[in-house]
Image (cartoon, rainbow, N blue to C red):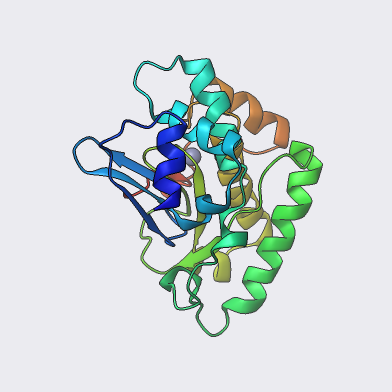
Length: 219
Ligand SMILES: [Zn+2]
């Protein structure tokens, strides 16, 4: 495979098996002994992106260098070169979601410009009926810490006031900002500072519901 050869030229150890996929949830997953799984779109990436990827995966790379490398390979638009399947369950919507989702995506765009200088990436926004206690969630890719998607509680979006829903979306966007700027994704001092700055509660809890528990992505 050409991609495997190019990765080895970029410094990947010779014996590492390389497998590609089009799962939009996972960019890179590397397990010692099992090899490297990565998004097929990387086959179209220039050498500096592949070098950054290998540097990120190489044990012993210093934290600052790792973060810089991560920015480089996550910025490469893999989906443009190897689009995901339209049957991906992630993109399936329920009747009645369409308007709410269009509004939320527009809000993400506007709030991104108003509070984050437009620095946040475009991210899938979905609704879930399976959330019981949570109002929202930011999902992260386990190995890279990349923000994969924002999921909001469907009942919350349908029934609560738009002010409350905007609060929840902003809460998740502060987590997205943490993830995309290489900060820890948590409810620590940085979260509280940014939350106050964008005008939402700096607490992790609101009433009996807990907005925005951060879930780790599954491998
Ligand atoms: Zn949170």
